[in-house]
Image (cartoon, rainbow, N blue to C red; front, top):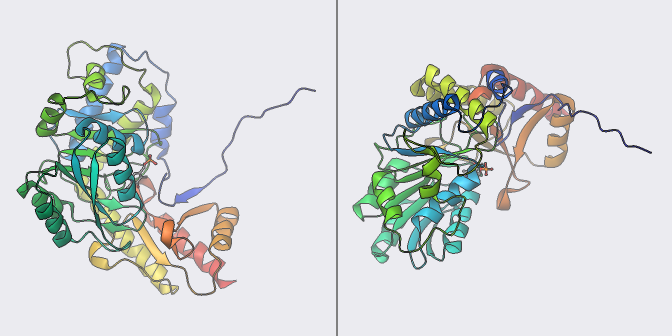
Amino acid sequence: MTVQFHTFIPPVRTLMGPGPSDVDPRILNALSRPTLGHLDPAFIQLMDEVKQLLQYAFQTQNQLTMPVSAPGSAGMEAVFVNLLEPGDKVIVCQNGVFGGRMQQNVERCGATAIMVQDTWGKPTDINKLEDALKANPDAKAVAFVHAETSTGVRNDAQALCALAKQYNCLTIVDAVTSLGGIELDVDGWQIDAIYSGTQKCLSCVPGLSPVSFSQQAVEVIKGRKTKVQSWFLDMELVMGYWGQGGKRAYHHTAPVNSLYALHEALRILHNEGLQSAWQRHADMHLALKAGLENIGLEFVVEEAYRLPQLNMVSIPQGIDDAKVRDQLLNEFGLEIGAGLGELAGKVWRIGLMGYGCNKKNVDYCVSALTSVLKR
Ligand SMILES: *Cc1c(COP(=O)(O)O)cnc(C)c1O
């Protein structure tokens, strides 16, 4: 008996969870174009444009700006393994899931993580960071998450970086969910190392992680006493392939078609303009908020530091979390996110990211939730 396998046709979905978000059809179209050799001059030209477009999106002049060929978690790891050496000390601010992953990365580099903890759903308290900086004058870096996807909180990246710089620390920022959705200014805010992802507010396919390193960070990497423990993520080796102009040497086979997709995603962002994209996220968040509050759903995070692209609401008393999400998925093809960690079963997380951040999705989500909650 031979088994028949059928081609996979994904069901129609509207993705309004914490990512991946709906991919713009223009990006899917770019993805399906013929593959080129990864050293083809035409492809190298595309790589140069991707770098330029990333510099625009991050608002940076950093030469070392490129997408790591792996998801956001790999960008996170790339930043830590390149900047840290055994014995280093890093202050990590945590107010959700992703700050915890920073701690894991720091420790796996043989460095010490000094944790600044804040309640999930609240922003990082800058006074606590200052206390930690005073108590640890030997700290090499301060690391935090700009947009904490697990809770929908925006940490004040500008203020946290300014403070870290006063204490001569490198600044390391997770911008996986913030890039393209809210204001982010890598050079203006003195961010030394930053990583993002493609599947959140860039509305691109998952699997790439844009990163950028300041000149100061590059000098730290060049001055290392020990080798970066990861061969694949060693920036000095990766730069041989992604380097500016000149000759490119084979390091790994770039995900050629995914880079077509990222190029298109960044081109779309560039055409819209950063300010307009941020404004659209802010406007759609207000529309969603009005709709959700109208059916009695309450936001958990205070307005002052709420993320427009990730809306966390409390699940009303007596409502079965999993049942509602199942009905939304099965009857409406609508995906929203569950709570993570200590918030599991208590909240929903509704994403309004990139291409999916539009009035049609806002109305669809509110009407689907209205219909399911009525039962
Ligand atoms: C999604 C996310 C990540 C991880 O990205 P992956 O592409 O899933 O590896 C890291 N940090 C934050 C804040 C995220 O939202």
